[in-house]
Structure formats: structure tokens, C-alpha cells
Amino acid sequence: MLRYLTAGESHGKGLVAILEGIPSGLRIIEAKINSELKRRKWGYGRGKRMEIEEDIIEILSGVRKGFSLGSPIALFIKNRDYRIEELPSIFCPRPGHGDLAGALKYNTPDIRNILERASARETAARVAVGAICKTLLSEFGIEIISHVLRIGRIEIDKKLEFNKIKILAEKSPLRCIDSSAEKKMIAEIEEAMVKGDTLGGVFEVIAIGVPPGLGSFMEYDLRLDGRIAQAIMAIPSVKAVEIGDGFLNAGFFGSEVHDEIYYSKKRGFYRKTNRAGGIEAGISNGEPIVIRGYMKPISTLKSPLNSVDIISRKKEKAVVERADVCVVPAGGVIAEAVSAFELARCLREKFGGDSLSEMKRSFQAYMQSLKNF
Image 1 (cartoon, rainbow, N blue to C red):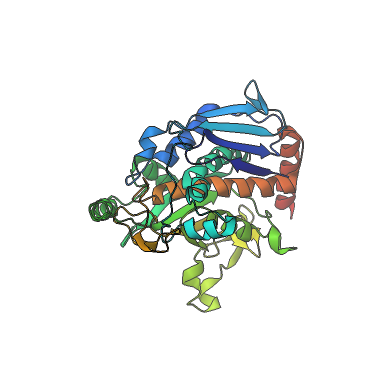
Image 2: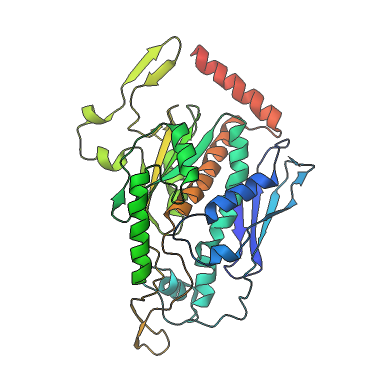
């Protein structure tokens, strides 16, 4: 079984992740993990915190001479902005944040105890875990990318193939493949900055090379789309998840929605459309997996909303913490990471193996069985 656990607070000593279930023999390169961490930091609209943190990975265990041992892999990301004991207590919760709900749940009037862990800073640990999972997936020909579809009221007006999206997204400060839309998005973000406001939007994640047969309909919690949706929903600020054309499909007849099936000796079974987003009945069907995450605006506003002081019960403005204006590009990178984990988890469940070579033998036998089907 592949699983992970994270620990750490936003302004604590650092973030820790323990990843269990990676087979032995996987080449793990720290530079690749650091590259993913850097991608998470990047993006127009990020706050000053991203200029402070280096986000350099330290592998504490589970790797020797650059290869996984099969034992749990412990990862550490040091926080340069380490001052949790010095920071003041907070008593005015921010609307839209976990401040009040967390204070009520954990019975503490000091919201600092809540926001330090609820902070999106923790997602750096998830990206580090996802980087290793991406490495595992690449051994089986699976690749994952993301790009921004919308920020605020501005949407892209382009549809491109996977490789072009991959190239253009990495060149853009907003991970946007439409240069015309990108200029308008930047203007929207700048307007929000002036107003002391924030912006949300939509990102898209695409995974190619995923073989049919990952996930299962045998139990509700084994369905691949459900597992991916939960992972994406667990990213701070994400309030909705779409697989394929899920939202759009709700307004059409079945004859207009379902992807018709074809067959040829060269390609085997295939589809000319992919409205299902690569998953049917909770199982990957061999088409690209397409996921969209819808992010609300960040809840920390420089022009704060009305709130109530937990101690005095008097009307006050919500607390203002250092924060981003727009995190949609980073949201896509985080979504890549958590999607990579879920796909890698399904891959491990199906093909097992204590070593990478053993896992590959099982995978190759399965792929041959698909050709013979």
C-alpha cells in the first residue's frame, strides 16, 4: 500500500512528510523534487512568503546512493520564516477560512493554533511526495501536467494538444497557454491587489499514458475518480472538482455525452472523444485523465471583511495575515502532485512488487494481456 503523512506548521521549524510503499530500486533525484517545489512557489499573484522560503528538500531516510530502499521515505523542508513561538495570538476569525470552525472544534480561543496547520504552506510537503510519485509513474510511461483555465472573470480561448500545453504553461507566469487571456488575467490580479482583494479561478490537470484498469467499482472507496476528487478537494481553497466534461455533460442527452467505442487492429479499443475524462465506473479507460479544480479566492484580504472578536464578542474586522492574492497556478501544481499520488497508489495496488523490477514485470504482463484481449 502507498500512503503518506505530513506534519508541520506554517511558521514552525519545517514540514515533514513520510511516504511509505515506494518499491526498492526507484531512482530518486533531489533536484527533481526541488524543481517541483519551485514550480509551486512560482506564479503571478503570490505573496512575500514565497520570496522568503527556499523550499529545498532534505531526504532523511529510505534512500541510499540515489535509489529507494523499499522502506519509508522521510522528507524535510526547512522553514526560513521560523517564528511560531513569537507570533501574537489572534482572536478575529477570517470569513472563508478555517479559523472559527477550527477554534470551535479544538476548543481554543487563540486562532493562531488553528491557522498554523490549516495554512496552505503544508502543501509543499504534498508536492514533495508527489514529485516522487511522478518519478514512479514515469517508469510506466505516465506523465502529468497542469495549466490555468480561468482567473476571476477571464477564461482562456484555446484548446491545444498535451505537448504544447506542457511547453507553454511552463513559460507563463500564470501557467496560462493563451497569451491574450494571460494579459487580462494579470490586469485582474493587479486590480485585486489595488483593492486589497483576492481572486480564484480554475486549473486543469491532464495525465497521459494511464493504462486502462486502475481503480475499481467493487467498493465505493476504490473508485479512481472518487479518490482523485477527494485529493483535489483537500487542497486549500478548492471548492469543486470536475472529471472530464462533468459539469457540461449534466445539461445534455446521453447520446450527446457518452464517448463511442471503436476498434482497430493497430490501436485496439479506442474513442474519438473523451468527455468522460479518462475514467468510467471508477476505472481508468486508457484515455487521458482530465481533472479540473475550482478555487475560491484566498480568504485573507488586505481590506478585511467584518468579523467578531472571539473574546469580547464585539464586531471587529477580520485579522490580516501575510497572504497571496491569487494561487490558481500553484493550485494546479499541487493538484498534479496529489493526482500523481493517487495514480501511483492505484498502480501499486494493481501491480504490487517489493522492487521496481518486480512491479514492471507484472505491469508488462498485464499490458500484453490487454493486447491479447
